[in-house]
Image 1 (spheres, rainbow, N blue to C red):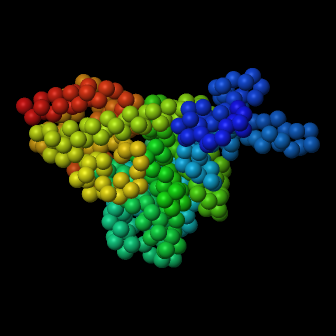
Image 2 (image 1 turned 180 degrees about the horizontal axis):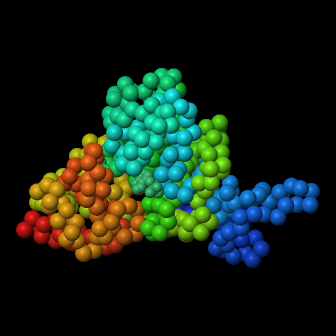
Image 3 (image 1 turned 180 degrees about the vertical axis):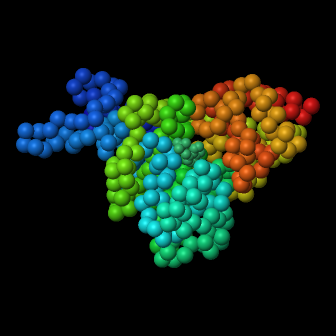
Length: 389
Ligand code: PLP
C-alpha cells in the first residue's frame, strides 16, 4: 500500500478501485501486483506459516486482493469471498442452509438459479417458495416465522427488471428470523449497496459488469456480519475448492479499476435508449426501472443512486417472430447471452430459458455496453423497422 496518512479526507470508491486500493508489490514496488500462481507455500522452521498462506485451494493472495476491492465497493464488514462463477457463489448461500429449511425466492429471477433451486435445492431438502418479491404483501405472506431461514431477492430482476424494496424485504426476513441475500448483479455496487439497506449477504455474478469485459466467469459474496453463517460460507468455499483461479482474479481486478467509468457510461446510455425506444412505433413496451412509468420506479429511485443500471428489455410489437427478426437484423449489437460487458448484447430471452419460462416471447433483453449511444440507437431502430417490413 502507498502511504495515505497525510491525506485528510477519505478517498472515494472510484479512486480506491482505480488504484486497486493503493496496492503496490512490496519487493519491486510494481504498481501492478503480480499474479500469485503458487499452490503451496514455504513453511517456517518453527512449523508455522507466518505469511498466513498455506495452500492454494482455500486461499490465494491475488484472489484476496480482488476480494478486498469488492468488500470496499460493497462496504462489507465481513469481507468478500470469490468463487469460480456467479452460480457457485449463489448456490453456496443455499448450501449453507440445513435440510428442511424454508427459503423464499423470486418467481422471476435469473433462470438458471431458479432451475437449480427447484431441482438441486429441493433435492438437498430445502423447501422452496417462489413469490413475486416486489409485492411486499405477497413476500410477507410467503415467509414462515421460525421456518424460513433465507429470503433471496434479485433487484433489478432478470429479465423484466422488477424492483424489490431491499430495506422492506430485510425487515420482513429479519422479523421471521431469516436472513436476506440479494443478487445485485444488475444493480452493481455503482447503483445499490444492499448491505447498507439491511441485507445480510450480497451476491454478484462478477462475470458481468464488475469484470466488464466478457472474459472472466466469476462470482462473489460480500457479508455484513462475520457471524456463524458467514463462516459457514467461507468453509464451503474453502473446503469444496470453489475458489476463483488467480489469473481470473487478476483480470477481475483489472476490470474493477475502470468499473465506475463503465457503469456510469452504460447506465447513461441505457437510460437514453429506454427513453427513445419508449416512443418507437415498433416497440410495444420498454422495461427499465429508470422510466417513471415502470412499476418499481419509486422504489428504484429510493434505493438506487447514479442511475438505474445497464440492463433493459423491450417487448417488440408484432410478437415473437418480429422480436427474433429484430435480433437477427442488428449490425452493431452482439447477438449473445450474458450481460455487463463493454460490448452491447441483444438476446431473445424466452428461447434460451425454455418452455416453463415466465419471460414473454416478444421480449428482447438488452445489455448496454460502452459504444456510442447514437450508433446503438440507430442500429436497433433500423433492425426494428426492417423486422416490421
Ligand atoms: N445472477 C444473475 C443476475 C445473472 O445474470 C447470472 C448470469 O447470467 C448469474 C447470477 C450467474 O452467474 P454466472 O454465469 O457467473 O454463473
